[in-house]
Image (cartoon, rainbow over all chains, first blue to last red; front, top):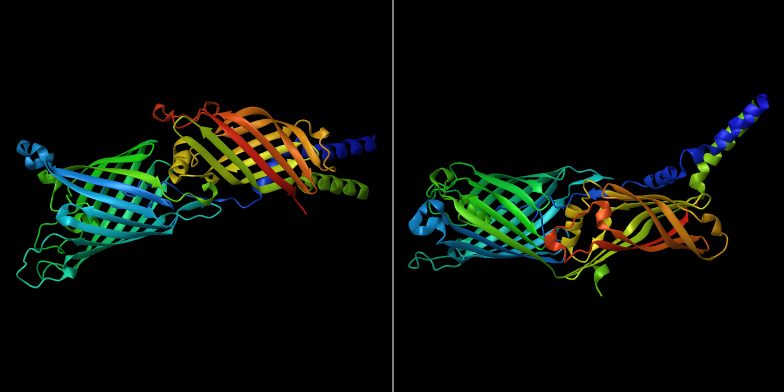
Length: 300
Length: 184
């Protein structure tokens, strides 16, 4: 009798692996492998949150054409069709040299300003096999205006036309629907109007995106300009808000902002409009991605 | 009592045997292909986890969605963000069996037709699937190959009307996994 118990027990043990479902056990064999690193992607839809830089670059081998357009200020009245009669435009091109390094150029109609920049992704938000809470990119640009000298009678230096901007971009994607970015920045102007004006102008920016649907999001962005840096001309903090609309190949961003300027120096250190006074500019960005160099696997 | 322990240990060894007998790979290949009037889309994943147990025919896949590569980076972004929602559903899995496993002689090189049946989960939706493929034995390597069609609607992957000319409603799937014995 006792022997038959033992035999039954043995048989039970023998069939235990089968009872436990070999498929699940087999899946556990696969799960023994270190979980793969899951890099966070698409923190923002495009390289701008609204008017300022996001942490994103075009993917390696991809070119982005970005057309930025701001109308005139709303408070200019019916005579000016609430700003529709004016246009401030930046034609921009960006390219992903590597998955981390991006380069960009732009031509602004404001004082015929050319700008060029580099943006490098140093740290990437990731989860799974390795964890890191946010993405960090560095940005540096140079801008040069090329209209005629305002005072041709005096000695002018080319360097006086040049300004620079440096930014640290830190962003985190929370779940799939919310992204937040902090953007401390410094603008350097080689020439300022008076000795009271600072050459180095600091600002702190914050911006975010709330995804409403897969292809539509609400975005807002604020760049706080620390006081007493720009003294001789009016300069205010920049606030912009708008929406991203994605349609297959294009991203449309439609927004309102108190900044007329479209490159970093212009809106971080030279925003002359105020929301409270109705200096609100309607604007839009249209961006389109083109694949220039395909990944190796897809070259034929 | 000693005998009893011996039996217990034997049983434990047999339990662990699942691992010993399994064929696995981390570098399985899955390609999907969508052909629509306006656009052809191809996604290739070369990091598919596959395991098979010759004794029982159990057969499992684990596919990380973000490991699919595309010709255009934008396709990849749209695939992950808008269609398969990789943040929500990072993996696709298959848990199934080769139902005619007895007909496959793992000791003899050759190509054998294989009938596979099981549960395929993509985008959080599980469907029972039944497909035919081939198992090729070449010395220590067991290769599983299959080609079949999936309907996006079966996995609740919706295609907006604006891109119906760019994305096909059905995908052609190619699977190729060369597996080796786990503990070699």
